[in-house]
Length: 230
Ligand SMILES: CCCCCCCC/C=C\CCCCCCCC(=O)SCCNC(=O)CCNC(=O)[C@H](O)C(C)(C)COP(=O)(O)OP(=O)(O)OC[C@H]1O[C@@H](n2cnc3c(N)ncnc32)[C@H](O)[C@@H]1OP(=O)(O)O
Image (cartoon, rainbow, N blue to C red; front, side, top):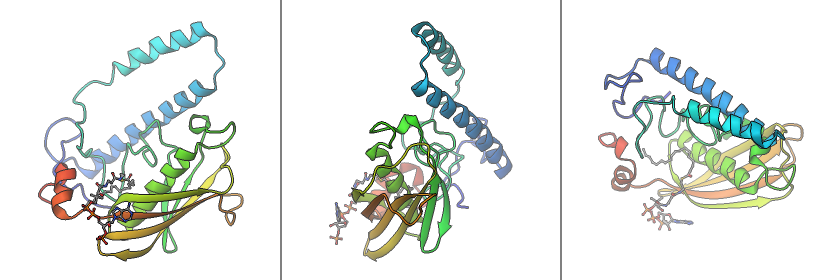
């Protein structure tokens, strides 16, 4: 596990570095809220409830949103619960257990790269019954970026070519794969693919990408929270 790069605010709003136990406690709560929000999103995009019920729910949700008070994270601030760039990202729209947008994808090391596992629901629909193509690209971009970081070369996407061979089914366990195939200076070349868990040898989407590690000056300018560490 990476340590957070700078002394982040403690979870209670002070500037003391939180203990690992406090961070785990906070992560569990963030994940619990994320889980409920994903259930809400799924129910929202599948319901056939009448207009009056939808207005009632909207009022209730507005009241609940008002309970999320306290200091709000600023742009480019790395949350204390995160491990940037290669580790836990609680609010990542792909892997974040705290994100209502994320499936979330679970990432494990695999032979020569990473495997990501997730199931996409109706909120990620493109053609009826199938995954939105942008969502497939997002899963691949994230895992391919993580593969760079896992290989010790964190980088940003400069090019991502995606080929859609078959539609990706909704509500079906998926297996995403990414591996670094080569480097050239600050450029990292990465391959990625998506298949279903049921038929892992049939790739339904493939991708190749180029990632670039920004030089230290650019890294400090882009990610001011990392100042003092790069
Ligand atoms: C502690 C270090 C931290 C490092 C950063 C880590 C971040 C990772 C974060 C978290 C990982 C977890 C997973 C995340 C996954 C999601 C990934 C994303 O969604 S990233 C968002 C979308 N991508 C962008 O917004 C980039 C926008 N582009 C840029 O800002 C610049 O291009 C930048 C900073 C990446 C590079 O700029 P330059 O000025 O340093 O580099 P130049 O000199 O232009 O290019 C370097 C080499 O790359 C080639 N290159 C550039 N663009 C290319 C392209 N489209 N195709 C092929 N090659 C390209 C160039 O020809 C050059 O090659 P030659 O050295 O001459 O051989």
